[in-house]
Image (tube, rainbow, N blue to C red; front, side, top):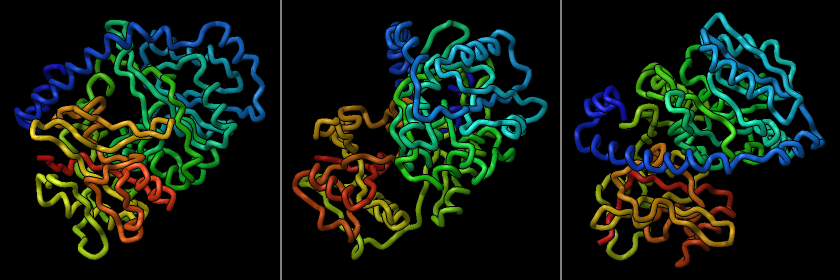
Length: 419
């Protein structure tokens, strides 16, 4: 955390929150050192790249890579071009738009695009050589919107850091932050349907576009490639280097989420959290006595009485959510339960278990409302339609809820204490 960001943060959030942010930053820095040392081992070798070049897909769509340009630094721009030229999937075109704002430049390139799919790439970032190859694999599985994992590249040190291993599509997260971000590839037909980038959202133009796109898609049409294929360059003045440097982008992100709520008929207030560019939707209070059932285990109580009301409000505003879980902490402030993810073997992995609940986690993800495969049956609110799913076995309960077609959400801001 540089000096400018430190003082900005302390002014906005106070000393206690700043101390927690510094603790999280130091933890992230320690993990960065291990990541940079291991990145070369994660890359495909020459034999694998050769195999990819020789692969014939059933569908081999033309992909139009759009780059909005504005006075790019020469060496950064050349590295971006080299990364495109080195792609193992070769049916692409590169279009560069300049002369206006970021949305205007991207739209200028889009107007000339011939591809069936559109890929968005910034002028000073760069791709792994197998980026398009893995995107086309997902296209052949029926995906219309594809995103990949990413990291950051520090120009000053020449090191890779902050690997962002993203979740599969999560609407709650997307309404908290544009976690999808880079590398984004979208079917051109879909963009034509929802509209191109809107200049009034510059700084959050991708977030706005993604929200408009996913509103039209089925979940199975959204694919997440869990590989780091995009490198977001950090340099002086970049958003990657200092997220607080572009306040207009944070305001645009807030408006993009507000527009999404209006389009989908959901009533809620979008609030920026203590972390710049991260948001929370507060929903109108709802009576929960009859329509919703709160289940708390022995010795578990709400730290704040409003937590129960907020659970009901979330269910009331989102009919597709079948269960809401809060975050349970022990007397020492350590996380006991905050949702679970399936491990692929029939079991569940606890999210953030044992972590100090004052920390926000990598990319602040631990502090954000998000979907989970399961929430504890010891701290859950169910809607009337899913009450029959309640079970003494957390896994069985949540599988029943999801089989009914409902989402399960955990909200880490709703704190419960286990005595």
